[in-house]
Length: 273
Image (cartoon, rainbow, N blue to C red; front, top):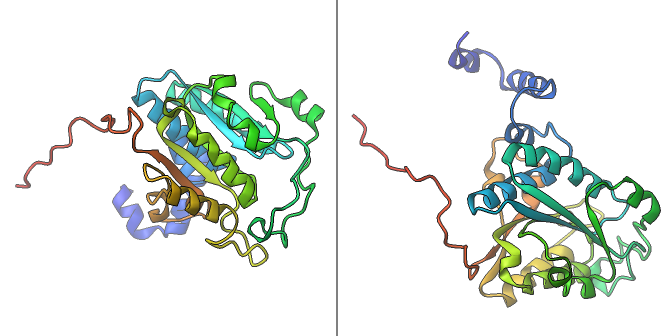
């Protein structure tokens, strides 16, 4: 049966089930596994993979990925496993950093931090247990208002290409954006960002006037040449997942490599016969 015939007579749900089963058995490449959610934390995998591809096209042998808000550490451990997969697929080394106080969430600073949903002390870290399991990621402890301002100078990271934002509060997220005031060359010209707390349920009721969404809006309003913009490509996929609406791209229009050509050289279209 040819592919065209299969598409005509086999229901889409059955074709998808067969494709997923094939991927789980070891078939397919990393982009396909991400597209079908056949990998842990596909949102993290997507950011790491595409940031690494951009780094390679720009000639960087290594890049960095950060997680703001480590909590128990499951996300950072997943990033370690995913980084190994991406490195083999793309050929770019990935350095990992997790930023957290280790003490759990601080007191909320007013309504913008959604105190009806978050409380002081949530997501406290077992530092000893996490540190014993981490193999490559570096933990950076401290108040985010302080750690972001000397992060680049202190750690001298490879260009930052992926950031997972999971600090929950408006105040903490806005403070984390202070990292973007660092030297532009500390980043790739476009960095892939995942925001964990912008959709939620009928309890959180996130809006553009509180939480991470407000932090994004304020950053864009106050930074004319730097923007955090939704990745519209993902929101047009045939089967859109929730996390597709949570991937944003940090753009630095004045980055020395922002306008550097990275696309396909041959894009000529021939006139049809």
